[in-house]
Image 1 (cartoon, helix red, strand yellow):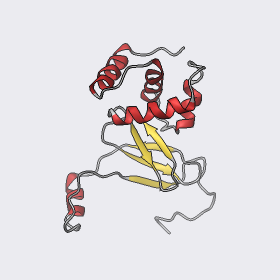
Image 2 (cartoon, one colour):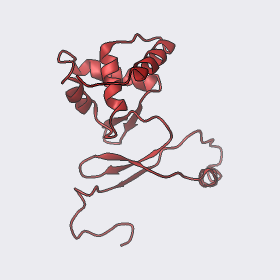
Image 3 (tube, helix red, strand yellow):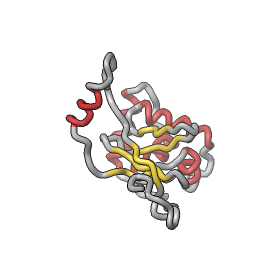
Length: 154
């Protein structure tokens, strides 16, 4: 069984109860896994990891737990045009880079200046921007095509 910080269970309990949900060991296990990883796993990957400690947990329970955590603001669901999704236990504002080959998602360290976003918003007549998501796409170090052109500098 993995060791965990009791304060994370308290945070989870408060968020769940504040949203009208019960605290369950299954939800706690999913939350602990997300909170302790920076891998941005798929639901299947969460299931495989959590099942090591909770052998009777179902994939459906993992999916429901993930959606509950997203609804409570304790996780972020990263969706893509190919109908795939990954989950992020880090809920502070940050951005991502995604590998076009293997699908790996990593956090980007750095910040976009508010003035840059304001500059983009000024070009969207009649549209009020309430948020944004920046994602760089390309190839991780494992998947980068050997000798292939760098599309940004070609």
